[in-house]
Image (cartoon, rainbow over all chains, first blue to last red; front, side, top):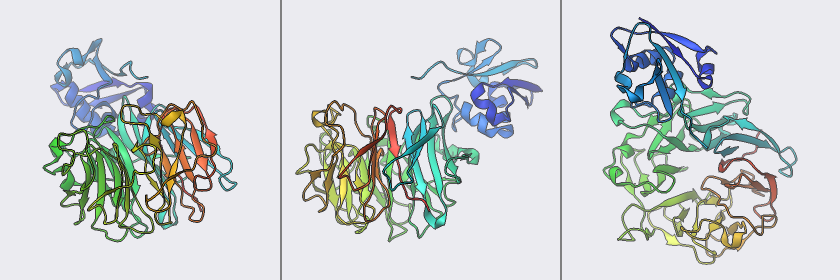
Length: 94
Length: 358
């Protein structure tokens, strides 16, 4: 299935300027398998979302719909065919 | 190159280092804790170790003096899956000798050494050090657990020295396959046994350019010299106002000449009496003298970090450059005799590197 991933401004340059990318992912899909597919398609984007152990970076959040996956099943969060996925940097820093 | 907590600035001088023009920020809002100017083989390459608080670390290089930057595919420095670890930051980028123009080293947090054989395009983990049985017992210093010093031996390709906080000095004699601690004579006052085999909190080690077996070290309390490639160390702190500090800088060509910037103490990390002072030895640490004309005489209550003090490559009158945590940068065109301000109000300065360009 195809999932659209909305990107924040900081990552768009690495996605040819696109605000969103469409990622083809096998069913059944999770956030983790979606990011695996993103790593093949846009590796420079994916490695900014997850580190090399596959862990979501501390100050990066992934939302499915309105829900932060950290509050749900994390990378195991299942994705439906019409899922809306957003990568949003946390409000942090100084 | 001036790396800060929130970006990289480039400064250049066209009048023999008397005045400077700044360009930046590059990598705005990214921490630049490591940078390098690689002038080997007649080609200039700038390298920057960048870390976004959100998006993680990466290594970039520029072959056009910073007009454009290239990130290596894969982010350049990444642990292999079996390491089960993630790079938090690049703490050191170090070109090898002119005889090995494609070799370049990186030190990272967590403490790991990386070797590039293509001038920083790609890096491979030096597994011999990563797999060292001591590694699980290395403890993070205040800034994190990182390799901040990489000193390839200019006369022996198989020998490399690294230093980390904490852990201390380790050396390899076989090109990185095996490593051993090399801290004899360096004190770790904060441990029950203050003279351990390893576990010291080295802050910086620098090699004497003229006598390759001679090394100088700024320790977490303690200033040392080794005359035998790090096999043993002797205190050279007498004559300094304090044995605490972070940088250690050596002359690009002259034997026995080094500079430090003392801070009061571990628990009081400001220059003595609030005066920024650089101290120089020209006799390998037998004596020290302040060379600080033009540096702030009072009200200076910030530190100079371990890589924020450097020398350029002008052999007969080395230039010195230092940046501080208040974002000020100072330069001396005459080995520290006279200083002037290059800029102020940058973010915290973490690293400075300088070179003459063809």
